[in-house]
Length: 311
Image (cartoon, rainbow, N blue to C red; front, side, top):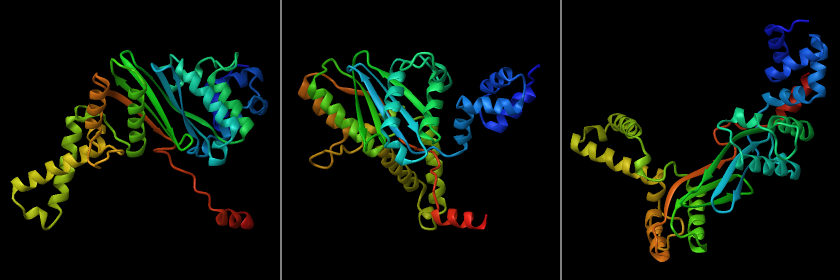
């Protein structure tokens, strides 16, 4: 029986399984829709994909390193914090991090299609589907990133059992314990204060212009501030922009371990550079926080009981 695009679409809507999985199921069952659904269920795809409508915003982030030259970070999500603490889930996330460290994939689609290095004969997607079936929750491999240092080193820091994971890449001619300790302190800074950029050179002119527009609108809508001279208003805007940049640029932030409570991260790096006899500078960083930007599921037990009672 010829398998049409409409049949594939119908099966996909029924099960939520992937397009290629649906096409294969229909081919295997000669186009019988009920048997195709059963085929997908038996192979785990339907069971896994049915859970895809449930929000997976918990989970953990994990980092794996190869010496001090290469590191990778991944975020794998689950529906509940309970599963995030499960040893099987954590072991799976570690394998996914190992996969990412040696991956040549440029995006998530390519990554999911890769041969799963922890178990031959499977893709990463196959391994994920199996874990969904075993654990019984919707799981997603949300993102990954690799960082390689050619002239310097990488360090990592994981906070809260995987709630936040950070990789810092630095340029330095000396890589010793003192340098690594300093960069680990920087990684902790990034975890705690969540900067968006290393320094102001990374901030686009468009971003600055947009922020100035917002600040100007705020001033114009304030009965008192709007009456001030233009020169004063411009000065207020510049002052507020500079304050914001100190918050979002790593080297401008106050170093969390500063003894005087004033030393910036940039000044701390200058101090470390002087102590080790060579310049140490941060090139880039990656910061993952579990579930950031995702809608978290809110369980209302009372509402659930009431709904069942009225059913």
